[in-house]
Length: 90
Image (cartoon, rainbow, N blue to C red; front, side):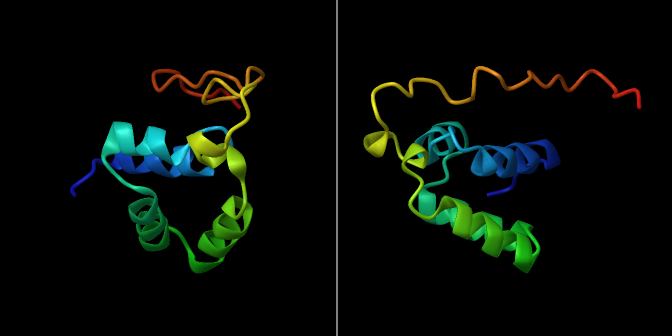
C-alpha cells in the first residue's frame, strides 16, 4: 500500500499508543496486526522496532477482545489533543 507521510506518521503513532488497539489501525488503514508489525519493522530503526515489540508483547489493551470492560476509548483522558495546524512555540 502507498501511504502518505502523514498516514505513516499516524500509523506509527497509533502503534505506539497503549490504548489504540490493532483493530482500530486495521479499520482506519487496512493493516492487520501482522501488517502493522511488518510496517513498523520497515519504518523504524532496528533498536526502535525491538523496543516497540518488547513494549507491545502481552499488552492486553492492544487487542479489543482482551481489553477489560473499563477501557472504552482509544486514548487516555489525560492525553493532550494534537492539532496539525498549530506550530509549537518553543
